[in-house]
Length: 86
Image 1 (cartoon, rainbow, N blue to C red):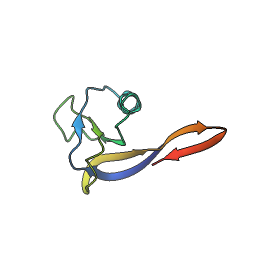
Image 2: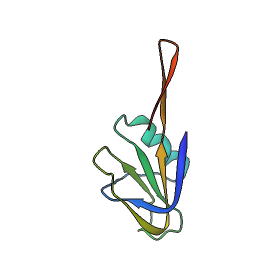
Image 3: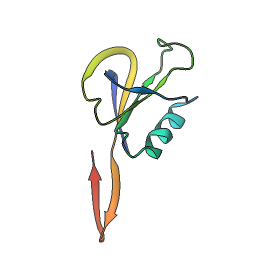
Image 4: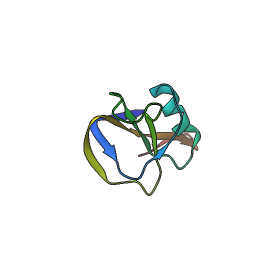
């Protein structure tokens, strides 16, 4: 599950090759340390650099037009109990 924040970026993210938002989010899901992604939807960044992954040390947010930040909620089942990680 993803929670979107329009026109917000996270400082200290790491670039990842991805041709679509879906690919970007899948890259985050494959990385256990990833907490979310920044997606540059207006091509304000350099071509091909639209996907940025948020690691555990990247927490500061700032306004930035043309970017949507997506926080990821990880979920798992522990002994029959649903556990959600923000």
